[in-house]
Length: 130
Image (cartoon, rainbow, N blue to C red; front, side, top):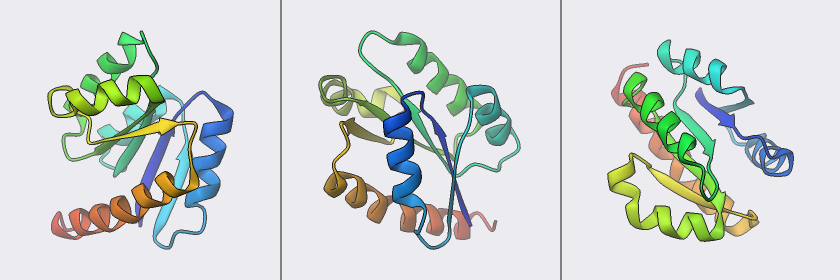
């Protein structure tokens, strides 16, 4: 089972992702607070974290670095407004971001991401022997 955590304050975006992943086989998605996410990562229980980040929100990138140190094998999807997403796309390798998802979410972009992400997470989990 692939465990996805959502550290997203925006209820609309959070609910769209929860509903969108609800019927994906082999995936369990939970909305959690930041401290809970840190504990999940520390225990090695999280495979992927969706982390909200918007323009001028440097603390989100600091959180990402902290999360990344605790769980280098965890995939991070940054959920951000379109302008910030475009900027993050350019800096993706430098910032430790695996994937960027722009809001407002479109069904096409979201399911394209899920279609790539879930099989990759399952392969990684098998490779790590979990």
